[in-house]
Image (cartoon, rainbow, N blue to C red):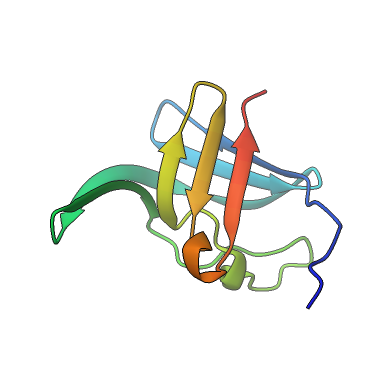
Length: 99
């Protein structure tokens, strides 16, 4: 399998009021509240992002919850955010850069 070489133009904006807006190619595809949670399971601690919604739509209004990059563990650096849906077992990971 060869992955797609096209890189999506996704922008995630976290708002001070607890809201999050996701745009894909300049079109808003998701708006909802979010929370960042510290979780400990079996002596393993991590941080994740959760939202009230389970569906993110694509630019055509279709369900793209298979690409729900707002669900997963996160790694935060000064200018980067990595959202990991399980890259250790070939699930998607999303690297976002602060602009």
